[in-house]
Length: 493
View 1 (cartoon, rainbow, N blue to C red):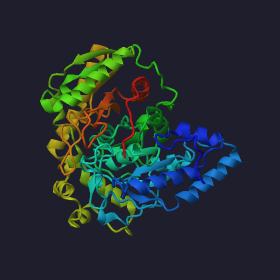
View 2: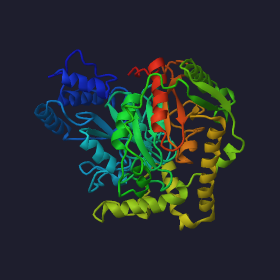
View 3: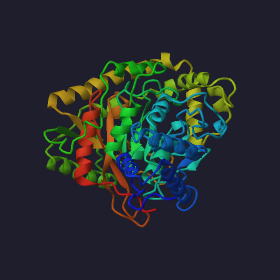
View 4: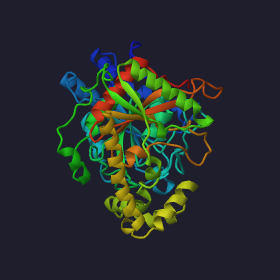
């Protein structure tokens, strides 16, 4: 049985799916079957995106249970009822392996769900699949020993960004409705930019990192990767919450819960004061296409009632070069994760993992360097970087206050996402959020010029950064721009 012809799978949203369910035109089983067919046609065959690592073998059975619950409750169900979700494969799941994209951990089976996965299931979501990623989320091109190189659905010669590139490619290609990613540097927002999606890196303490494979105690965050701002708001509302396993979420627990969906307004940019950060925009010919799109975003925001100022922050680049802490924290963070897995797993410690020598070369080299750092949390360089993070927070916050700005705008990547085969994605601006803990929302800004391999052009993402717990405001600005411009287009697979 197929969904009603009035329901369109491509670019479906939570709202359009639930509306079709209420009309009796669609069931969760039909929806899952349609997505599985699309995955079968496009992930390992056809364009062969290599976006996914594991499909949930019980997803149709679970969908049938949700359909029975829908009938029994007459549609009065959770906010994500029957909605298929793709998880980056560093989120623990008690019913599926959690591999980090590693052949050494292909049979690693956690004992419980990540806190955010538990929240998704309680809201009625279905875990459809787990996505490929840059192995252990260390890098920005989304290649792993278990899954190979994920390709960008808009240009099959390019990467989808990273490290959450499997999620990004899958959601862009309409393999599911919602996706999750983790972000140590810019790993939610890089795929969002490269795949014409919306990505949210939340305020430090808003969303739990519990039972998610870590890179860093101070930099790691998790959040949504989706096609629309509305669905980003829905998913963030479900994911946010206090988790005793991640004590930093106590910082968010003292604030009243926010309904991010209710905060969205089509006129949200009217009266807003936005600062375009010129320090984050390149000045060379290779930056021209990204800069042209950012000028379009600027003009679009101004037409919607925003005041956009151009600003520079003296000393910013020098400071941001010394705020990353993950190299010094990674070993201790991963050992903590392994301690929670238990002794019956195929890999039980960081040294064992590194000495298996199974990771793709750039990741293997990075982990060897991390293993070589003894007592990283006491090193003078690490302590200086912790101090620099506070300096960066004050620098950005004071600039916002001095100019009366609501948010700072910049391109997430100064150049287009790189071709497959490159060692890393250069010239990204994710440090402004990961170096401060401030929230950031990346959204589609436009496309580069079309080419033979990129018939629509390569997506270019814009990012808005604001002070702690300003997600509702940032999402409303992105929503107003999205509704007025309708930049997103599905890839031509």
